[in-house]
View 1 (cartoon, rainbow, N blue to C red):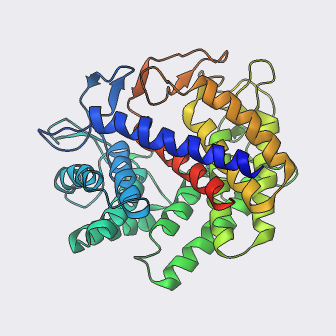
View 2: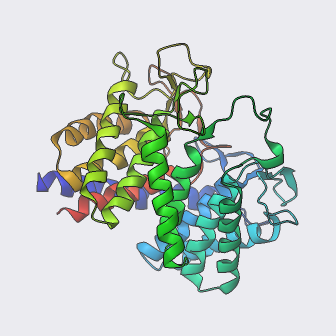
Length: 389
C-alpha cells in the first residue's frame, strides 16, 4: 500500500506542476489590463474576455496559496499580484460589495447580487496578504469577510427574486463555504470569532441540512430544517454535499474530533451510493431526493468539480479513518475521473461530459470553470497521500 500511496502522490504532484499550472500560466494572464482570462478553449485560445469575479479571486487564491504552502516561487506571486491589484481597483461597488462580472478593462457588467463573490474575495486576499505582508490586502480580506457575515442570512439581499414569506428556504452553499472560508482565514481572525463561526457552520451543516434517516445532504431546507416538497426542497447536489463533508473533516481533524470525521465519511459514502450512475459510471450533477424528474435539465451531466471534490473527500476520509469503503470508492472514482476528464494531449482537464462520459464542451475554462478546482484537488490529494507515507 505504501508503494501505491507514493505512486499516487507523485501522479497528483506531477499533474499539478507539469500540466495544470503551466496551462494557466501560459494562457490566462491578461498582461495588458490585469486579471485573468478564464474562457479558454481546449488548445488555449481565449474565446471571451469578460472577467468573472468568482474565478478571478479563485485564481488569486490558487497562486497565493501555492506560494505560501509549496514554494516561494516569484512567478506565482507575480501572477497572484496581477489579479489582486486588478480586483482591488475594479472589483467592488462604492459600498464595498463585490460585483459578479466585469469587462476585460474592469468596468462593471453584473451587479453584486450574491455574497459568493465576497467569499472568494476574502479567501483570495487573505492568502495574498499572507504571501506579501501587505496591510491593504488584509483590509480587503477582512472587509469582504465582514460582508459575508453581515449578509449570510440574506445572501442575495435586494437582488433576491423570491417573494417574501411564501416559501422560505436556506441553502447549504452558505454555511459550507463559510466553514471553509473561516478556516482559510484563521491567521487573520480573532480566536473567539474563529471558533464561534466554525461551531455555527459545522452545527448547521451537520444538523439542519443532513437528513439523518437517509444519510443525504439536502441543498435547501426550511428555516426550521424541515423538508419542503418542491423542486428546490427535494434537490440533492452530490458535489456540494461531498465537498461540504471534506470541509467538515478538515475542521474536525483540526479539533481531533473522530466522531464528526466518521459521520462526514458516512455521508460521503451515502451520497456516492445514491448518485453513482450504475450504467455509464460517474456522478450525476443534480438529483431529486424522491426520484422525481429534476428541475435542472443538465441533471445527468458529469462535471469535473463534482468528481475532483469526491477524490479529495475519499482520499482524506481514507487517510483519516482507514475505512476500507473509502479506499474502494476512491479507486472507482479515480479510474473514472482520470480516464474521462484529464486531457494529456492538450493539458488541463475537461469540465463537462454528457451522461455517457463523452466531452460535451470543448473548453478548459469558462464562466464557471477556472484555475481552482483542478489545481486545488491535485494539491490536496497529493498532500493526503504524501502525509501517510
